[in-house]
Image (cartoon, rainbow, N blue to C red; front, side, top):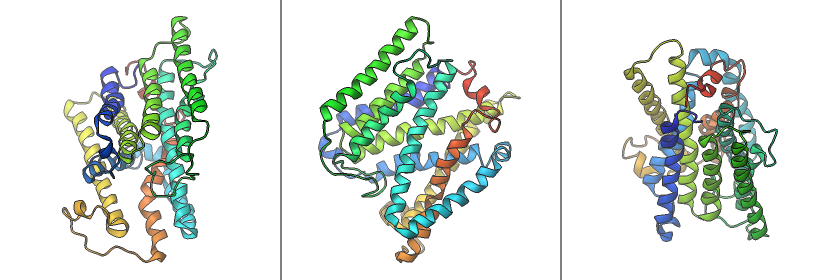
Length: 358
């Protein structure tokens, strides 16, 4: 069983991540220990990570039916987020970044589970016969690397220095905890194979690959490679590309429910989603750099010269931080509503769970 179809799943959800792993293993260690190069930031952070955040608008604000289905949360989410985050940022910007970092981690984990749940639902698999429960194993595959991050020295951060709690000591009992980790993962895989052989579970290559890819991606990106470049590439590619693919797939399938879409219309949907999201991502990051960071001036000012100086007064920092992070936080919130199989999302089951799609 596949989510979008065998070739689409492999080319969009899995192979990009696997390619990143191969590249990382071949890169020299001295390169991996460098800061993220500007071109890597432009392609992966701006071009994938921030772009995927903005692609949410095609599933919400720019779709009249979806907007009406989620009107309350679409209006209130940014307002409530602004009020709460502004209060936190006014207290201390360090608190703001810490809250944002943990929201981001939670969001990234939920997305991994969300895709896995879709594969499970599509294969019509239940958990009645399992010792190694899917949900526990999937979250454990991500929680262990994050815990390792908190209890050891890592050469990277999520947003800024100090956003995670960290003891800055070597991870205690690593051999024992890592053995438990790999035994649990192997146990899930062995049990999955046995359940398939007994015809209790349906064979779903996508479901197995998703859990295994999540496992290795979080382990390699956080534990194995102690590198900002490695963490950035593994994190962004595994999260951003599948999400953009999901947004585009949903649009195309929804529009084709009652009429046949021409090839031109499909190409238009794909290109407009990517281009508009990318332009909005550029605009957001341009404002971040112009008003606050001034770290990517070589890139942005070569395209559009900054018309004003950076705003360095501390009294304006909380407001700027919250306003500029609002698209991201709103995306985190909305994702908890727009992918639920309920009456507010009447097309989800038909589009994503139907056996006709993969």
